[in-house]
Length: 108
Length: 118
Image (cartoon, rainbow over all chains, first blue to last red):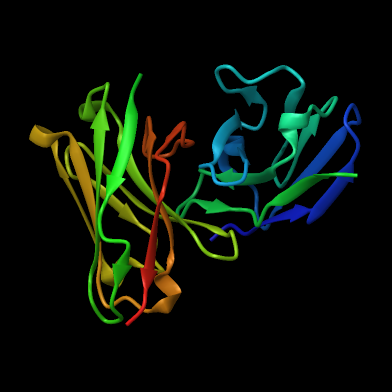
């Protein structure tokens, strides 16, 4: 099983600032099959990024993903009020599919 | 616009079977892998497994011995049965879709809280 470790656990930033979230895998993620999801309170997770760097339909371009192998990054270039949420990475290259434990982006 | 809606009891007694159904609307059930994911009270997400429209399944090994999934194409719905539940199975259960066996989850249901308690 591939274990995904996200850091930091909580990121405290002001609106307009840049957010950088990390996801590290315990072994190489096949095909860079790595996705990022956003979860706002009381909502289901929403797909942001797949294939490590491809934005899902309707996702603003302030969200970008990068990385390969075992190290992946989600960057939010300028935080908007609606971006304060919990973010999860997930690998779908191996079975079982696994998720990271999440990074909470909160208002500073 | 395809939508997913799960249904089932919100309370299950320990040692009994948790049963949930997910209805697919606005699209065909034939072209996806239908997935169950749960989120614990601590907010951790766990992939439970998936079933294709033809009945091919892939289960999380941690749950495999207690798990059965099925699909009913005539009703455009798929189901989850998890037996011998304990308090550790208390979670929000989501159904979701994936385009292939190894794919991300691009559509999620709203989620259904299932509590295991006597």
